Amino acid sequence: MRIGVIGDPMVDRYWVGKATMLSPEAPVPKVKTEKVFDTLGGACNVAANLEALGVDVVRFWSEKNIPVKNRLMVGDVQLARWDENDYCVPIGDVFPDPLTNLDAVIVSDYGKGTITPEFVDLSQNIALPMFIDSKRNPAEWSKIPNAIVFPNDLEYQTYQEEYNKFRMCGHKQGAKGMRLLSYGNPWIEKVATAYNVRSVIGAGDTVIAAFAYMFVRLGCLESLSTRALTFANAAAACVVEMPYTTVVSEETVVRKMKNYDS
Image (cartoon, rainbow, N blue to C red):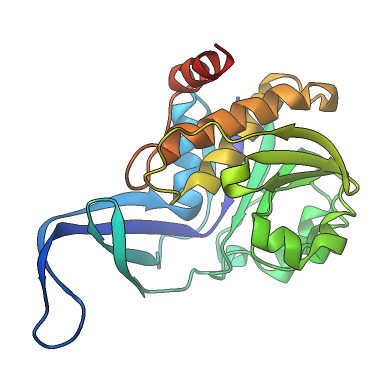
């Protein structure tokens, strides 16, 4: 299986420490950092999740400028976030004749600049399943016949009328779980299966990667979308039970599904 990932590459940088007192300068915790480390974020995290599932990933983005999301953590609690280099080079600068020998394409559009209106127009001619997680108005993607969109709850509520125009929409409902809609009609619903949520950072990346993986593996048949949604929902449960931004193997996801069914 080969899946192309097109979108905004990012780095998630964690500053982890302890807080034992308030700062004498302001009513904020005084944190003594004990370690700093980077994980993959954005489109990079989508690609990493696919690779953890055994997919051959083809990346389409520029390495010239990669945004960094810094997070100050005490245990599992995020105290602050600050962003650096908060833009990406437009895909037009790096996009070759793109889609040779691919089974599907994932668009991971965080609104940092990789995805351009020109690319959205070009996507109308891509005769492959396209899985789209985008911060922009979904009306821009509605002309793509093979588009499957994945809004979070706020995005869906904001643009509900537009999302209801898609044949397949994976609505990420956070603690409620996920549901798949067809032209606005609820089709499949899955309750959340996480037992102990520690971090939701990157969970949306895991969802779209896991759904795309299983959907392609099952032959891109809409009739089998229940299995793809179940797998994606379980994958999300696995990663939110772990700290920081992470990926998950198929074995771990299957174990989660079995434990939930039992």
